[in-house]
Length: 213
Image (cartoon, rainbow, N blue to C red):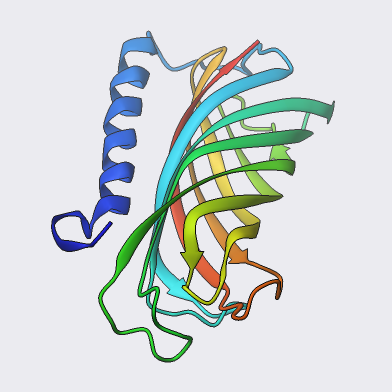
């Protein structure tokens, strides 16, 4: 998929998901809860976002864009009046990586392709602070993989591992429904299983909506 008219595909995903979730949150919110929400231990949600800039904390590739949409399941493992620990699983039906597939780290200025992928992040932990009642900040991390339809870059691999960590907050528009805003640092790497292992480090901003049972 050439960039051209689709060079902002990742941004379109973010804006589309944001619009849908904003409409959903307005329709669901009767009034902002004033006390601690009474919610179940299971969470089902949808979220999506895109990278605002690349970094080189671990990876070497600097000129790329990334966006994804995902479904989330979370289960509370432990909680008290102030803190909670959740196990999270993300199913990723849509991941888009924009890059010069013929390039290499330090030589990435050619025409860009947008490569489609899908994946799973089954090993996740989220640490929540419950003291604010109607909203709760959190720190989260997870490990998983993404399978792209083409090698990224052309000397790399289709299969890549992922590692995320970041911060965010859930805002309870009803006792059992919450709007999520967050930031993730995301690393994508083939762990030296290909001729080239460029490594991609994305700063991901995302929005989501969750139901608790």
